[in-house]
Length: 499
Image (cartoon, rainbow, N blue to C red; front, side):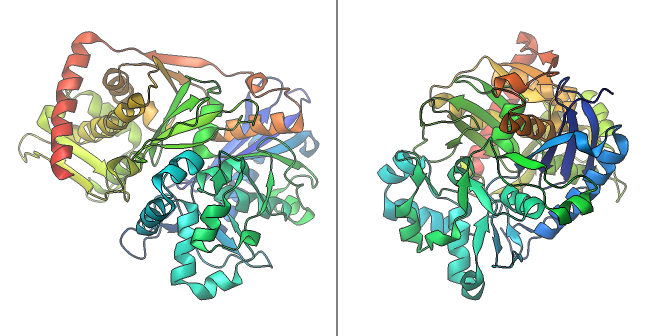
């Protein structure tokens, strides 16, 4: 390749760490890798808990970076900036020596729900919905309060708290910073006054000094240290210039930056994310509003986020556990599902087996299979019913989004994870009654693009999209839509009996 500048993007997920090296001129991927090759372990010491060791994230970031570099025909001097995308809502705590004090309490952990509900009641719905735009729920601030109440010896040692992306940036640079968008997803941000919420800190009795210094989402966030550069195999001094939670970053990856544009993803969890210029809040906090990547006080941009915790993780459960311990490839499951008629011959699946679901008012009803017939239903019907059940759960949440006067006709997704399945894509378009557009995009590429914006290689976020293409479209088909909606109504009746 020509000696164009190269951008390095990280996507720190709960299943793996993905790395992309992207040509900044063409937008082409010149090297990529992910680690581990199987889903990263989520520990659950108690029911409703979900934790990961941040050290694992760093180790896998090192492995994936080295592998991506081995694939790329570039010189280390071509890498000009680093960007980071990360799993949202997690909590990492470190002491003054930057040593992690306990495993990270990650996004799908449910232990702090009651604390968040109490905060919503005591701070008042008016304050929470107008200033935080959400109930404190089981977000990062509530998780920190849980540590203060239940692990006071850990809390006393905390020097700084971080979101997962802040931790990865710390390992790269040695500096501890955070962003306003990150604080908004953790419920630390007062959107009315554009500052950290002193009322919430006071209510939770959180020492303000634990919050890192705020840096811009796009812009200088530290330089790669000599130690980390040596471990990665690249040059020291490269600037970290972007960080974002995975869902705002996914929308950015699809050029969903302006009001009315909507993105979706279905990895471990599933999300529909709608961009708005209004600080919309759902009175029941079934969907949540956070600061979008391109938000400024002058041109406000918010992301209204519907999350279903149990999407791809249920498909993974089927893959790993259905055939006497023999792992079935996703491609095989998708092909099997395609052979089954719409509606899965009456089989229905509720995919809510990954913690409390915010769109269900934080109820944890678990995953369940309904109307299983041992004679009629085999792995094909189960595979299709899981994919349909995931789509129906997203469709159920999409109805809540539409209650907030967001009615898109087009939804964009990267052609990855669940959107590699034709069955899933067809069901999604028909159940949501939208045109589904699939792009050659993913989180690590968007992180690389964001680094280019922060470094000044691109003048705006919209200018950072060379090489982005719509590669496939799905449109509602009336005779199929009728069958999908009939099955969806039946699925919804089963769900409502469980609630």
